[in-house]
Amino acid sequence: MRSSHTDRLPVSLHHLRRMTDDTGLIEHAIGRIPRRQEGYSTDDNARALWLAYEWLRYARERGLEEEAAELARLIDIYFAFLAWVQKSDGWFHNNVSYDRRFELEVPSDDCQGRSVYALAVAMCEERDPARLTAYAQVLRRGLEAAFALTHVRGVAHVVAAAARLLQHAETSKASQEAVPEFWAFVRQRLPGVVERGARDLVARFETHARGDWPWFEERMTYDNAVMPWALFEAYRLEGQGRWREVAEASLEGLLARMRTPEGRVRPIGNRGFAAPGFTALWDQQPLEIAQLAIACDAAWRATGDGAYLQIVAQCQRWFFGENDRGAPMADPFDGSCCDGLTPQGPNLNRGAESTWSYLVTEVHVEKAFADLPDAARAYGAWVGVSRQNAVASEGRKALGALPR
Image (cartoon, rainbow, N blue to C red; front, side):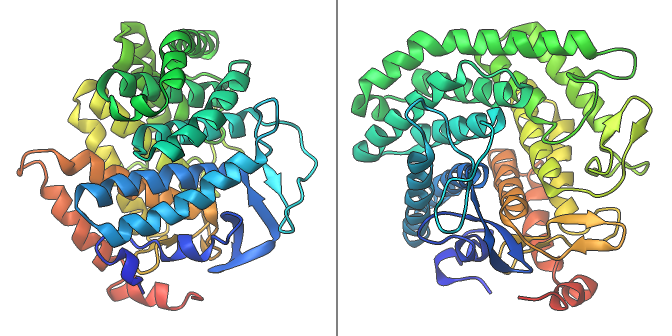
């Protein structure tokens, strides 16, 4: 059941709140119950900060004051977590036990990139000068550490973060007045970050791409769509034609391995992933659908090609049963999502990453269709109906059998 705080949002944030305590977002769940034994990850709290700001914008634009206040409360928790786990050298520690001890680990480029991107979103969306001052301190340290990233997904997140900050610097003045030194740093340092990062991604593509394998690596593994997404964001900023060419070619190559024979989207399975001549079917992770929706939303904005918009819609429908098991993965009543799709059906645990994947896909559906003419927005009406139908009839029976 939706809480009173989220009745007027098109999604429920009940499960997100259930998984969040006063420290941060708990990583795993047993069914729908937080599994405290495995603690927290910075990856998840960074994503949650990003997600909360996307829905906060939606709430503010519609004057939803109660929902905005609840999202602001969650935002403070997630940002406080990131500020806490950032070390003096700017790197973010990723894995934290439930008793708030930092676990032994090798620093993660992926975590650094995700944290920087989430903070960039926060920096562009926040209005309060006190929060902006705090964000600027943490984000600048994080960016300076991230300039040395070498792993491709970390690089991609930093390119996307830098592009978003530079786009904001061109169009908005309010947040810049609160922290002028930070925005001077953005204008001075980040154009070079976008340029070097985009060139790095293109060089990786040119090294590995061949024949029917238009890709950045020898295999497609996890979080795949972040690379074309970053290049589309860089292209939107700078207009470099080669960046768009590689973004389009790589996204099409990814889609060739994420489509069923009938044309539906499906994640690349994590039991072997994908390589030339092979694509694993199982197990399917919601994260891959979410990142595909994000990339296709960016592709639509960069190119105006409506085919990308259709893929965003297909991603939303995957969560409501248009998948290889015909099973609803998301529960619109509480906003939770199953952790994966297996040959036997959904994994009934509903952890942080999968729940984020569903909720961020929904916000990109809302964004993608928000400003279209009425005829093109017909799908927007279907979206609202589909959220109800996902738990009707057989879908409702399936969800009713799951633990709440």
